[in-house]
Amino acid sequence: MINIKKLTKSFENNLVLKGVDLTIEKGDTMVVMGASGCGKSVLLKLIIRLLDPDSGEIWIDGKEITHLSEKQMDEVRKDIGMVFQSSALFDSLTVGENVGFCLVRRTTMTKSEIAKTVAEKLEMVGLKGIENMMPSDLSGGMRKRVSLARAISMNPQIILYDEPTTGLDPLMAEEINILIKKLHDELGVTSIVVTHDMKSAFSVATKMAMLKNGEIIAVGTPNEMRSNSQPWVFDFINTGIFCDDPNKLTTR
Ligand SMILES: Nc1ncnc2c1ncn2[C@@H]1O[C@H](COP(=O)(O)OP(=O)(O)OP(=O)(O)O)[C@@H](O)[C@H]1O
Ligand SMILES: [Mg+2]
Image (cartoon, rainbow, N blue to C red):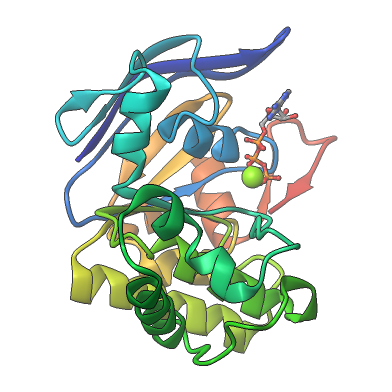
């Protein structure tokens, strides 16, 4: 469904992705882990071409997308929902307008059809009837869920989640995990979930990958990753403490 080959991306002299290779099969929930600042969000933004790569290929459902025009890319994006790390809601729009944003811009649906779809998606994320609230009146967990409702508004085949549970209390995080699994089980979507939250990672993943120093250094099923013999991978997953340089301990 998604095939990434030798993908590189740098910002001025900061080489962030040095050659990422990753395949995500249809119906998989691929969790991408890695230390803060290693390029996880950049990877997701490249997949929806919010950023352009320096080199490499990104195949989505049989189509290589790195050379597509903005207009062609808009077609591809119809099939991809994204939950941004910051939720990225439009603060001047109501919750209903946020969730229906793409439906208004990219479909020919009538106002009442849009209202019905918005209501359904909000109900799906456990926020029935809050269409008229403003994003500023929502808790962090509610914002994430509204962002998720917006991501699924167009019934995408692919959903990209950037840190969907970060900053949420354990109960709210678990609710988000349940939602991710529900979308996977009931709608058969293919997902990439970027997270530091190992509980969430093992709760939702069908496959996992570890990004380090601009490359994928390990990939496998959750069980394979748990028993990965590379010390850095083992420590990241099992202790949350990892380091290359003993003088510079880092925590997840
Ligand atoms: N638009 C940009 N312009 C310049 N540098 C950028 C830009 N976006 C990301 N970077 C740099 O790319 C690197 C990777 O950033 P990214 O946001 O992908 O990290 P991350 O793995 O998602 O980290 P975190 O876990 O903290 O969210 C960082 O050094 C960041 O400063
Ligand atoms: Mg990030």
